[in-house]
Length: 474
Image 1 (cartoon, rainbow, N blue to C red):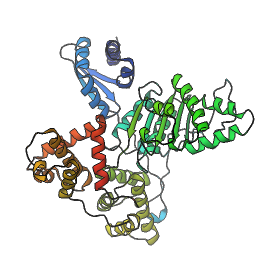
Image 2 (image 1 turned 180 degrees about the vertical axis):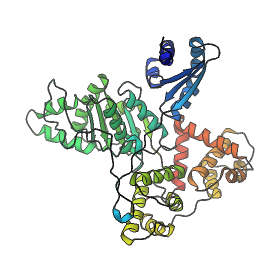
Image 3 (image 1 turned 45 degrees about the vertical axis):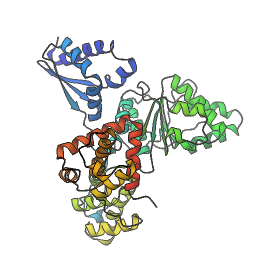
Image 4 (image 1 turned 120 degrees about the horizontal axis):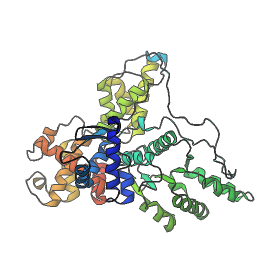
Protein backbone atom coordinates (compact mmCIF):
# COMPACT_ATOMS: atom_id res chain seq x y z
CA UNK A 1 0.00 0.00 0.00
CA UNK A 2 1.20 3.51 -0.83
CA UNK A 3 2.42 5.06 2.47
CA UNK A 4 0.88 8.42 1.52
CA UNK A 5 -2.56 6.79 1.47
CA UNK A 6 -2.18 4.73 4.65
CA UNK A 7 -4.11 7.23 6.78
CA UNK A 8 -7.12 6.93 4.43
CA UNK A 9 -7.05 3.14 4.60
CA UNK A 10 -6.76 3.16 8.39
CA UNK A 11 -9.62 5.64 8.77
CA UNK A 12 -11.88 3.70 6.39
CA UNK A 13 -11.18 0.53 8.40
CA UNK A 14 -12.01 2.48 11.59
CA UNK A 15 -15.30 3.73 10.08
CA UNK A 16 -16.30 0.23 8.94
CA UNK A 17 -16.09 -1.03 12.52
CA UNK A 18 -17.70 2.05 14.13
CA UNK A 19 -20.62 1.87 11.69
CA UNK A 20 -21.54 -1.49 13.20
CA UNK A 21 -21.57 -0.03 16.71
CA UNK A 22 -23.12 3.44 16.41
CA UNK A 23 -26.68 4.20 15.29
CA UNK A 24 -26.87 5.09 11.55
CA UNK A 25 -28.02 8.70 12.06
CA UNK A 26 -25.43 9.34 14.76
CA UNK A 27 -22.73 7.76 12.62
CA UNK A 28 -23.66 9.95 9.65
CA UNK A 29 -23.76 13.11 11.78
CA UNK A 30 -20.68 12.69 13.98
CA UNK A 31 -18.25 10.41 12.13
CA UNK A 32 -18.72 10.92 8.39
CA UNK A 33 -17.78 14.65 8.45
CA UNK A 34 -14.39 13.75 10.00
CA UNK A 35 -11.53 13.64 7.46
CA UNK A 36 -8.22 11.74 7.86
CA UNK A 37 -5.15 13.99 7.45
CA UNK A 38 -2.06 11.91 8.17
CA UNK A 39 -0.62 9.07 10.19
CA UNK A 40 2.79 8.96 11.89
CA UNK A 41 3.64 5.59 13.42
CA UNK A 42 0.68 5.01 15.81
CA UNK A 43 -0.66 8.57 15.76
CA UNK A 44 -3.59 9.31 13.45
CA UNK A 45 -4.44 12.97 12.73
CA UNK A 46 -7.98 13.82 11.64
CA UNK A 47 -9.79 17.05 10.77
CA UNK A 48 -13.07 18.05 12.46
CA UNK A 49 -15.43 20.95 11.61
CA UNK A 50 -15.19 22.76 14.96
CA UNK A 51 -14.05 22.62 18.58
CA UNK A 52 -17.58 21.85 19.69
CA UNK A 53 -17.67 18.92 17.26
CA UNK A 54 -14.45 17.57 18.79
CA UNK A 55 -15.74 18.07 22.34
CA UNK A 56 -18.99 16.26 21.53
CA UNK A 57 -17.13 13.32 19.97
CA UNK A 58 -14.89 12.93 23.00
CA UNK A 59 -17.69 13.37 25.51
CA UNK A 60 -20.02 10.89 23.80
CA UNK A 61 -17.89 8.35 21.95
CA UNK A 62 -14.47 8.40 23.66
CA UNK A 63 -14.63 4.75 24.76
CA UNK A 64 -15.73 3.59 21.31
CA UNK A 65 -13.00 5.62 19.61
CA UNK A 66 -10.29 4.27 21.94
CA UNK A 67 -11.28 0.61 21.57
CA UNK A 68 -11.67 0.72 17.78
CA UNK A 69 -8.43 2.67 17.23
CA UNK A 70 -6.48 0.16 19.33
CA UNK A 71 -8.01 -2.63 17.30
CA UNK A 72 -7.09 -0.97 13.99
CA UNK A 73 -3.68 0.58 14.81
CA UNK A 74 -2.47 -1.17 17.96
CA UNK A 75 -2.16 -0.70 21.71
CA UNK A 76 -0.22 2.56 21.32
CA UNK A 77 -2.86 4.19 19.09
CA UNK A 78 -3.34 7.93 19.49
CA UNK A 79 -5.75 10.35 17.84
CA UNK A 80 -4.93 14.00 17.15
CA UNK A 81 -7.58 16.54 16.10
CA UNK A 82 -7.16 19.45 13.71
CA UNK A 83 -10.02 21.96 13.80
CA UNK A 84 -10.98 23.01 10.29
CA UNK A 85 -10.05 26.65 9.70
CA UNK A 86 -12.86 28.93 8.50
CA UNK A 87 -11.62 30.83 5.47
CA UNK A 88 -11.30 34.55 5.88
CA UNK A 89 -13.18 37.04 3.77
CA UNK A 90 -11.07 39.44 1.63
CA UNK A 91 -11.27 43.14 2.41
CA UNK A 92 -14.01 45.19 0.79
CA UNK A 93 -13.52 48.42 -1.15
CA UNK A 94 -13.98 51.54 0.98
CA UNK A 95 -14.49 55.18 -0.04
CA UNK A 96 -11.30 57.11 -0.82
CA UNK A 97 -12.31 59.67 1.77
CA UNK A 98 -11.58 57.09 4.45
CA UNK A 99 -7.92 57.44 3.52
CA UNK A 100 -7.43 53.78 2.56
CA UNK A 101 -6.82 52.54 -0.99
CA UNK A 102 -9.85 50.63 -2.31
CA UNK A 103 -9.48 46.88 -2.58
CA UNK A 104 -11.55 44.78 -4.96
CA UNK A 105 -13.78 42.35 -3.11
CA UNK A 106 -13.84 38.78 -4.33
CA UNK A 107 -16.60 36.34 -3.53
CA UNK A 108 -16.04 32.64 -4.04
CA UNK A 109 -19.74 31.76 -4.02
CA UNK A 110 -20.96 31.06 -7.53
CA UNK A 111 -24.60 32.14 -7.43
CA UNK A 112 -26.66 32.79 -10.52
CA UNK A 113 -27.28 36.56 -10.83
CA UNK A 114 -30.72 38.03 -11.27
CA UNK A 115 -33.90 36.12 -11.94
CA UNK A 116 -36.62 35.37 -9.40
CA UNK A 117 -37.76 31.76 -8.90
CA UNK A 118 -41.14 31.34 -10.54
CA UNK A 119 -43.39 28.96 -8.60
CA UNK A 120 -45.85 28.96 -11.49
CA UNK A 121 -43.55 27.35 -14.06
CA UNK A 122 -43.72 23.59 -13.75
CA UNK A 123 -40.20 22.24 -14.23
CA UNK A 124 -41.18 18.82 -15.52
CA UNK A 125 -38.47 16.18 -15.48
CA UNK A 126 -35.57 18.53 -16.10
CA UNK A 127 -33.38 19.81 -13.28
CA UNK A 128 -34.62 23.33 -12.62
CA UNK A 129 -32.22 26.26 -12.77
CA UNK A 130 -33.18 29.02 -10.36
CA UNK A 131 -31.59 31.84 -8.45
CA UNK A 132 -31.24 30.50 -4.87
CA UNK A 133 -31.65 34.09 -3.60
CA UNK A 134 -28.63 33.81 -1.32
CA UNK A 135 -26.61 36.85 -0.32
CA UNK A 136 -22.89 35.94 -0.65
CA UNK A 137 -22.03 38.25 2.25
CA UNK A 138 -23.93 35.86 4.55
CA UNK A 139 -21.35 33.09 4.26
CA UNK A 140 -19.72 31.08 7.04
CA UNK A 141 -16.49 33.07 6.58
CA UNK A 142 -18.34 36.18 7.83
CA UNK A 143 -20.28 34.36 10.58
CA UNK A 144 -18.86 35.19 14.01
CA UNK A 145 -18.93 32.15 16.28
CA UNK A 146 -19.32 32.52 20.04
CA UNK A 147 -21.04 30.87 22.99
CA UNK A 148 -24.29 32.49 21.81
CA UNK A 149 -24.44 30.53 18.54
CA UNK A 150 -21.89 27.70 18.75
CA UNK A 151 -24.53 24.95 18.61
CA UNK A 152 -26.19 26.50 15.56
CA UNK A 153 -22.85 26.88 13.79
CA UNK A 154 -21.87 23.26 14.50
CA UNK A 155 -25.21 21.94 13.28
CA UNK A 156 -24.97 24.18 10.20
CA UNK A 157 -21.53 22.91 9.21
CA UNK A 158 -22.68 19.31 9.67
CA UNK A 159 -25.71 19.95 7.46
CA UNK A 160 -23.66 21.66 4.76
CA UNK A 161 -21.41 18.59 4.60
CA UNK A 162 -24.31 16.16 4.23
CA UNK A 163 -27.63 17.95 3.48
CA UNK A 164 -30.66 15.83 4.28
CA UNK A 165 -28.52 13.05 5.75
CA UNK A 166 -28.05 14.24 9.34
CA UNK A 167 -30.44 14.09 12.26
CA UNK A 168 -30.73 17.90 12.01
CA UNK A 169 -33.64 17.82 9.57
CA UNK A 170 -35.48 20.07 9.82
CA UNK A 171 -33.17 22.62 11.45
CA UNK A 172 -35.26 25.21 13.31
CA UNK A 173 -33.30 28.36 14.22
CA UNK A 174 -35.00 30.84 16.55
CA UNK A 175 -34.12 33.95 18.54
CA UNK A 176 -34.63 37.69 18.80
CA UNK A 177 -33.97 40.25 16.05
CA UNK A 178 -30.41 40.85 14.88
CA UNK A 179 -28.90 37.71 16.41
CA UNK A 180 -27.87 36.12 13.10
CA UNK A 181 -30.72 33.76 12.19
CA UNK A 182 -30.85 34.81 8.53
CA UNK A 183 -27.06 34.86 8.31
CA UNK A 184 -26.74 31.31 9.65
CA UNK A 185 -29.53 29.94 7.46
CA UNK A 186 -28.08 31.52 4.32
CA UNK A 187 -24.54 30.45 5.23
CA UNK A 188 -25.71 26.84 5.26
CA UNK A 189 -27.36 27.32 1.87
CA UNK A 190 -24.24 28.96 0.40
CA UNK A 191 -21.98 26.19 1.71
CA UNK A 192 -24.26 23.52 0.21
CA UNK A 193 -24.46 25.42 -3.09
CA UNK A 194 -20.65 25.54 -3.23
CA UNK A 195 -20.11 21.90 -2.29
CA UNK A 196 -23.03 20.41 -4.23
CA UNK A 197 -23.69 22.68 -7.24
CA UNK A 198 -26.18 20.21 -8.73
CA UNK A 199 -28.53 20.52 -5.75
CA UNK A 200 -31.39 23.02 -6.06
CA UNK A 201 -31.20 25.45 -3.13
CA UNK A 202 -33.86 28.08 -2.46
CA UNK A 203 -34.10 30.77 0.23
CA UNK A 204 -37.48 32.45 0.70
CA UNK A 205 -39.24 34.25 3.55
CA UNK A 206 -42.58 33.19 4.97
CA UNK A 207 -44.47 36.25 3.74
CA UNK A 208 -43.28 35.72 0.16
CA UNK A 209 -44.29 32.05 0.26
CA UNK A 210 -47.75 33.02 1.46
CA UNK A 211 -48.07 35.62 -1.32
CA UNK A 212 -47.07 33.07 -3.96
CA UNK A 213 -49.64 30.60 -2.62
CA UNK A 214 -52.44 33.17 -2.70
CA UNK A 215 -51.57 34.10 -6.28
CA UNK A 216 -51.56 30.42 -7.23
CA UNK A 217 -55.05 29.69 -5.86
CA UNK A 218 -56.45 32.69 -7.73
CA UNK A 219 -55.20 31.48 -11.12
CA UNK A 220 -56.67 28.37 -12.74
CA UNK A 221 -54.42 25.28 -12.63
CA UNK A 222 -51.56 27.23 -11.05
CA UNK A 223 -51.75 25.58 -7.62
CA UNK A 224 -50.51 22.33 -9.12
CA UNK A 225 -47.60 24.18 -10.70
CA UNK A 226 -46.87 25.91 -7.40
CA UNK A 227 -46.71 22.62 -5.48
CA UNK A 228 -44.78 20.96 -8.29
CA UNK A 229 -42.14 23.68 -8.23
CA UNK A 230 -41.46 23.39 -4.50
CA UNK A 231 -41.31 19.59 -4.67
CA UNK A 232 -38.27 19.96 -6.95
CA UNK A 233 -36.25 21.80 -4.29
CA UNK A 234 -33.37 19.91 -2.65
CA UNK A 235 -32.64 22.45 0.13
CA UNK A 236 -35.52 24.69 1.19
CA UNK A 237 -34.74 27.59 3.54
CA UNK A 238 -37.78 29.47 4.86
CA UNK A 239 -36.98 32.63 6.85
CA UNK A 240 -39.53 34.05 9.33
CA UNK A 241 -41.64 30.91 9.32
CA UNK A 242 -43.99 32.58 11.82
CA UNK A 243 -45.48 34.53 8.88
CA UNK A 244 -47.07 31.38 7.40
CA UNK A 245 -50.52 32.30 8.66
CA UNK A 246 -53.77 30.97 7.19
CA UNK A 247 -55.13 27.40 6.93
CA UNK A 248 -54.68 27.24 3.14
CA UNK A 249 -51.05 28.36 3.24
CA UNK A 250 -50.24 25.99 6.07
CA UNK A 251 -51.93 23.07 4.34
CA UNK A 252 -49.90 23.67 1.17
CA UNK A 253 -46.71 23.99 3.18
CA UNK A 254 -47.56 20.84 5.16
CA UNK A 255 -47.79 18.85 1.92
CA UNK A 256 -44.51 20.30 0.63
CA UNK A 257 -42.80 19.61 3.97
CA UNK A 258 -43.95 15.99 4.02
CA UNK A 259 -42.88 15.34 0.44
CA UNK A 260 -39.43 16.90 0.79
CA UNK A 261 -38.71 15.30 4.17
CA UNK A 262 -39.71 11.85 2.96
CA UNK A 263 -37.44 12.30 -0.06
CA UNK A 264 -34.48 13.13 2.18
CA UNK A 265 -34.33 16.82 1.23
CA UNK A 266 -32.97 19.37 3.68
CA UNK A 267 -35.33 21.81 5.41
CA UNK A 268 -34.14 24.89 7.33
CA UNK A 269 -36.46 27.35 9.08
CA UNK A 270 -35.95 30.52 11.10
CA UNK A 271 -38.37 32.16 13.50
CA UNK A 272 -38.47 34.94 16.07
CA UNK A 273 -39.79 32.46 18.64
CA UNK A 274 -39.49 28.79 19.63
CA UNK A 275 -41.79 26.22 17.95
CA UNK A 276 -43.79 25.83 21.16
CA UNK A 277 -44.51 29.60 21.19
CA UNK A 278 -45.82 29.85 17.60
CA UNK A 279 -49.43 31.06 17.54
CA UNK A 280 -52.21 30.01 15.12
CA UNK A 281 -50.27 27.07 13.70
CA UNK A 282 -51.77 23.64 13.10
CA UNK A 283 -50.58 21.03 15.59
CA UNK A 284 -49.50 18.65 12.81
CA UNK A 285 -47.20 21.35 11.41
CA UNK A 286 -45.80 22.29 14.82
CA UNK A 287 -45.00 18.64 15.54
CA UNK A 288 -42.98 18.46 12.33
CA UNK A 289 -40.98 21.54 13.23
CA UNK A 290 -39.82 19.58 16.29
CA UNK A 291 -38.71 16.49 14.35
CA UNK A 292 -35.12 17.63 13.91
CA UNK A 293 -33.08 20.13 15.90
CA UNK A 294 -34.25 23.43 17.38
CA UNK A 295 -31.43 25.90 18.07
CA UNK A 296 -31.78 29.20 19.92
CA UNK A 297 -29.40 32.07 19.11
CA UNK A 298 -28.68 34.12 22.24
CA UNK A 299 -27.41 37.64 22.85
CA UNK A 300 -23.69 37.85 22.04
CA UNK A 301 -21.31 38.25 24.96
CA UNK A 302 -18.59 40.89 25.08
CA UNK A 303 -15.89 38.66 23.55
CA UNK A 304 -18.12 37.75 20.61
CA UNK A 305 -19.15 41.38 20.04
CA UNK A 306 -15.51 42.47 19.98
CA UNK A 307 -14.64 39.61 17.63
CA UNK A 308 -17.38 40.76 15.24
CA UNK A 309 -16.10 44.34 15.19
CA UNK A 310 -12.57 43.13 14.45
CA UNK A 311 -13.96 41.02 11.61
CA UNK A 312 -15.82 44.05 10.22
CA UNK A 313 -12.55 46.00 10.19
CA UNK A 314 -10.94 43.30 8.09
CA UNK A 315 -13.91 43.04 5.74
CA UNK A 316 -14.21 46.78 5.24
CA UNK A 317 -10.45 47.23 4.92
CA UNK A 318 -10.27 49.92 7.61
CA UNK A 319 -8.11 50.42 10.67
CA UNK A 320 -9.95 51.46 13.84
CA UNK A 321 -8.26 51.67 17.22
CA UNK A 322 -8.75 48.83 19.68
CA UNK A 323 -10.03 51.32 22.28
CA UNK A 324 -12.83 52.39 19.93
CA UNK A 325 -13.80 48.78 19.20
CA UNK A 326 -13.81 47.95 22.90
CA UNK A 327 -16.00 50.97 23.63
CA UNK A 328 -18.55 49.91 21.00
CA UNK A 329 -18.51 46.28 22.18
CA UNK A 330 -19.10 47.47 25.77
CA UNK A 331 -22.02 49.78 24.98
CA UNK A 332 -23.94 48.02 22.18
CA UNK A 333 -25.05 44.78 23.85
CA UNK A 334 -28.40 43.93 22.31
CA UNK A 335 -27.58 42.26 18.99
CA UNK A 336 -25.22 42.03 16.02
CA UNK A 337 -27.35 44.27 13.81
CA UNK A 338 -27.16 47.28 16.11
CA UNK A 339 -23.46 46.64 16.66
CA UNK A 340 -22.78 46.67 12.92
CA UNK A 341 -24.92 49.79 12.55
CA UNK A 342 -22.87 51.58 15.21
CA UNK A 343 -19.62 50.52 13.53
CA UNK A 344 -20.75 51.79 10.11
CA UNK A 345 -22.02 55.03 11.67
CA UNK A 346 -18.62 55.70 13.23
CA UNK A 347 -16.99 55.10 9.84
CA UNK A 348 -19.49 57.38 8.08
CA UNK A 349 -19.10 60.21 10.63
CA UNK A 350 -15.32 59.98 10.46
CA UNK A 351 -15.40 60.11 6.64
CA UNK A 352 -17.92 62.95 6.37
CA UNK A 353 -16.31 65.09 9.07
CA UNK A 354 -12.72 64.16 8.15
CA UNK A 355 -12.32 63.24 11.78
CA UNK A 356 -10.28 60.57 13.48
CA UNK A 357 -12.01 57.40 14.67
CA UNK A 358 -11.92 58.04 18.41
CA UNK A 359 -13.69 56.97 21.58
CA UNK A 360 -15.29 60.45 21.73
CA UNK A 361 -16.76 59.95 18.25
CA UNK A 362 -17.93 56.45 19.17
CA UNK A 363 -19.63 57.87 22.29
CA UNK A 364 -21.42 60.49 20.21
CA UNK A 365 -22.66 57.81 17.79
CA UNK A 366 -23.82 55.37 20.47
CA UNK A 367 -25.82 58.10 22.21
CA UNK A 368 -28.02 58.21 19.11
CA UNK A 369 -28.39 54.44 18.97
CA UNK A 370 -28.77 53.42 22.60
CA UNK A 371 -31.95 54.87 24.06
CA UNK A 372 -30.27 55.77 27.34
CA UNK A 373 -26.69 55.73 28.56
CA UNK A 374 -25.96 52.17 29.54
CA UNK A 375 -25.54 51.77 33.26
CA UNK A 376 -22.23 50.08 33.99
CA UNK A 377 -22.89 46.50 35.06
CA UNK A 378 -20.99 45.35 38.13
CA UNK A 379 -20.24 41.99 39.71
CA UNK A 380 -22.39 42.88 42.71
CA UNK A 381 -25.33 43.78 40.43
CA UNK A 382 -25.09 40.41 38.70
CA UNK A 383 -24.88 38.60 42.03
CA UNK A 384 -27.90 40.49 43.37
CA UNK A 385 -29.95 39.54 40.30
CA UNK A 386 -28.95 35.89 40.60
CA UNK A 387 -29.79 35.78 44.31
CA UNK A 388 -33.21 37.32 43.67
CA UNK A 389 -33.92 34.96 40.75
CA UNK A 390 -33.05 31.79 42.69
CA UNK A 391 -34.37 33.11 46.02
CA UNK A 392 -31.12 32.58 47.89
CA UNK A 393 -29.05 34.89 50.09
CA UNK A 394 -25.79 36.54 49.11
CA UNK A 395 -24.04 34.61 51.90
CA UNK A 396 -25.24 31.34 50.35
CA UNK A 397 -24.05 32.41 46.91
CA UNK A 398 -20.46 33.10 48.01
CA UNK A 399 -20.32 30.25 50.54
CA UNK A 400 -18.75 26.82 50.10
CA UNK A 401 -22.14 25.11 50.10
CA UNK A 402 -22.40 22.12 47.72
CA UNK A 403 -26.19 22.14 47.50
CA UNK A 404 -27.12 21.72 43.86
CA UNK A 405 -29.26 24.86 43.57
CA UNK A 406 -26.63 27.05 45.22
CA UNK A 407 -23.77 25.59 43.17
CA UNK A 408 -25.62 26.21 39.91
CA UNK A 409 -26.58 29.74 40.96
CA UNK A 410 -22.93 30.43 41.84
CA UNK A 411 -21.72 29.06 38.51
CA UNK A 412 -24.31 31.08 36.56
CA UNK A 413 -23.28 34.20 38.46
CA UNK A 414 -19.63 33.73 37.47
CA UNK A 415 -20.59 32.95 33.86
CA UNK A 416 -22.74 36.10 33.57
CA UNK A 417 -20.02 38.28 35.09
CA UNK A 418 -17.53 37.02 32.54
CA UNK A 419 -19.86 37.28 29.53
CA UNK A 420 -21.67 40.55 30.33
CA UNK A 421 -19.07 42.70 32.08
CA UNK A 422 -16.31 44.04 29.87
CA UNK A 423 -12.71 43.89 31.08
CA UNK A 424 -13.70 41.77 34.07
CA UNK A 425 -10.88 39.38 34.97
CA UNK A 426 -11.35 35.84 36.21
CA UNK A 427 -9.42 36.71 39.36
CA UNK A 428 -11.76 39.65 40.12
CA UNK A 429 -14.83 37.47 39.68
CA UNK A 430 -13.36 34.76 41.92
CA UNK A 431 -12.33 37.25 44.60
CA UNK A 432 -15.91 38.57 44.86
CA UNK A 433 -17.39 35.07 44.86
CA UNK A 434 -16.04 33.86 48.16
CA UNK A 435 -12.36 33.97 47.23
CA UNK A 436 -12.46 31.41 44.40
CA UNK A 437 -9.39 31.13 42.17
CA UNK A 438 -9.42 31.86 38.44
CA UNK A 439 -9.36 28.12 37.57
CA UNK A 440 -12.62 27.61 39.48
CA UNK A 441 -14.24 30.53 37.65
CA UNK A 442 -13.09 29.19 34.27
CA UNK A 443 -14.42 25.72 35.12
CA UNK A 444 -17.78 27.20 36.19
CA UNK A 445 -18.11 29.12 32.91
CA UNK A 446 -17.38 25.94 30.97
CA UNK A 447 -19.97 23.96 32.97
CA UNK A 448 -22.64 26.60 32.30
CA UNK A 449 -21.87 26.66 28.55
CA UNK A 450 -22.19 22.87 28.37
CA UNK A 451 -25.41 22.71 30.39
CA UNK A 452 -27.01 25.39 28.21
CA UNK A 453 -26.62 23.03 25.25
CA UNK A 454 -28.26 20.05 26.94
CA UNK A 455 -30.63 21.33 29.65
CA UNK A 456 -33.58 23.42 28.44
CA UNK A 457 -34.63 24.60 31.92
CA UNK A 458 -31.08 25.58 32.81
CA UNK A 459 -30.71 27.52 29.55
CA UNK A 460 -33.98 29.37 30.24
CA UNK A 461 -32.68 30.39 33.66
CA UNK A 462 -29.55 31.89 32.10
CA UNK A 463 -31.53 33.58 29.31
CA UNK A 464 -33.97 35.10 31.81
CA UNK A 465 -31.13 36.57 33.83
CA UNK A 466 -29.38 37.90 30.71
CA UNK A 467 -32.59 39.63 29.64
CA UNK A 468 -32.94 41.12 33.10
CA UNK A 469 -29.38 42.43 33.21
CA UNK A 470 -29.01 43.63 29.62
CA UNK A 471 -30.52 46.97 28.57
CA UNK A 472 -33.84 46.47 26.79
CA UNK A 473 -34.46 47.68 23.25
CA UNK A 474 -36.66 50.70 22.87
